[in-house]
Length: 418
Image (cartoon, rainbow, N blue to C red; front, side):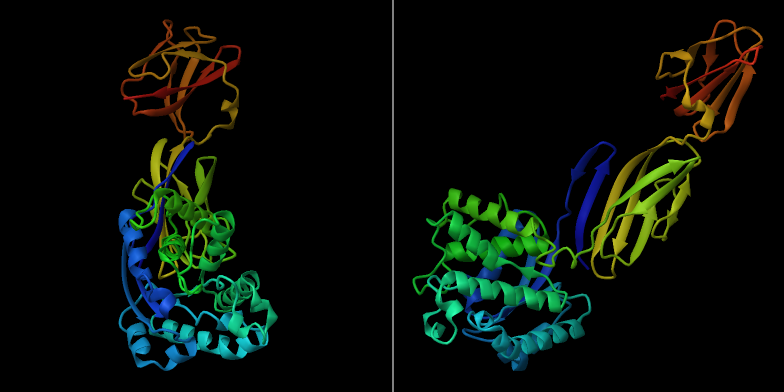
């Protein structure tokens, strides 16, 4: 089971810290994977970002998904272990053909492989590898289907076919082809192609690796290591576009539906804290309220015994992926509605042992102190000096009420620190 995200939220300042990840991936495809050893490039990026990618592959030149369906090596590798991901890559031309032909020559075999992957382990995520159009289109098939005569037309068909496969099978797509198009348009000086105008150059393979890292680990490739044949400027441009294309369109690529995401908010009323679960794609929850109490409700309520700060943790899971969310909350329930109008003056505030109260005082005026959950803990006559001993009270937020002989009331609050 992989922990996909760890987010720490603190009152006003929000700090995101994604946990180190260990991910296992099987690559099923052809030379678009094994040229320049794409899996190792992804693994190198992961290592440089503090993560670990363990991989295996079955990649045979020119192989189709149909051939992988009957390939015994592919079948045995799928069943070899509970992979986190299995990458499925079709032969580079087939998904660019006419929709009617793709529906016959591609989709049934993608469906069969997805079924095999999920039958082997229900927690394995199939992920489709959207490839790129040839540098100047597919001349060998141009006469039969004119959209592939140009790079743009071929890329458009690849884009649509891979998204169709992803959406049909509720599986994510690594949008390498989409990133490829943007880098090609934005930085024409970066040569993404091998001299055969089809296979990737090292720049093209690195682009693929950055895209896969972002899609699988859901972390930015910006700042990652890069091969020494790529200069720092080109590497940075590729990293940034891969980051932008993946994270700006997570729902388009189906990445956000494949991963558990955690989040929650809370409100307080009359001493009861109500938690609203904002997690996505999870089925089970475990709450730790920070005071020893827990709950498995989706949207629990909790009453704290004392005011103060608590580390509330939410663990969300779908049985495969998990997310852990920690939020520091300050519990300050308004247990007494009347304390909405504060008219007393108190100092020092925060206090430590004594607090000077200045209000409507007289020797016969009542002085009440309430905890912030509404419990009266002190009831006495107001001291003539106005000095009140609070040394025995625990740290927290307190409400003060003074009642005069004529029935007049003054109120205030103070913070007691230790």
